[in-house]
Image 1 (tube, rainbow, N blue to C red):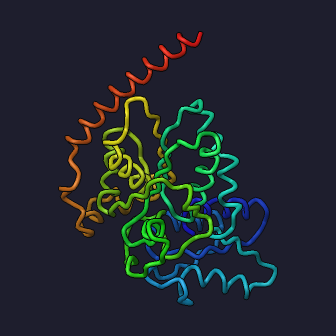
Image 2: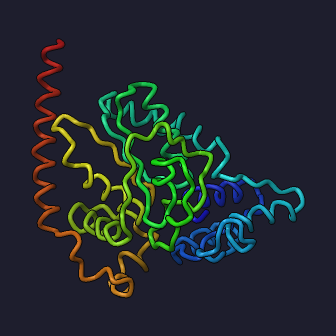
Length: 291
């Protein structure tokens, strides 16, 4: 891990007096590593391009450490179903409650699958018509597996976006709950995050930009009365040296940006606000009719 599970474990271990050891990918931002270490975690950086079965990979290193360290416990968030259960009992009910049961679409990045599948299961139980949209990265195997049921190694290659995609099939991804899977590029995810900061005042992280990019990909199928919940799992302060750094963006070939125009985003924002006003009027009228 190098994401929210890692931060959570580091905090809990600090409170409980446990020694926390985290294996992380070498593509993790320096801000993430510094945050984990600041909470007392021991961080072992593993090569991002190592295949899962390679002893150097962060999967294999974690499993080996659990075998070698006496009195240790390996949480294994990819296959530990408590991961999904946490979101079934928390995130799902929160979304259902806060949208007053009106949610029509749930858009979420797919990594370990816990946030996506646990929340999706709860929402589908409340209303089977809620559309679940998974977000995957180019270089990951998840979307192809959802489409074909086959693990295709040819889908795997290096990618920059953090917090989504996998080179394994995690046990927490319930593919039967997903209605649509969308792949997004490193470039579009980075620019979408930057646009949210520049135009909406939301300093979100790399995978949050990916999730928002997926919303733009499905906008043509949305109706004015739809209620779309998109989950932003990370904060932009963890990527100040990457997607919010112009030099890093130039080094990756992401600048200047020709893939997404601010004009088109501004037009969509105007349309979105018009839809939001129509939806509010629709709700008020519906409530009046019910009363």
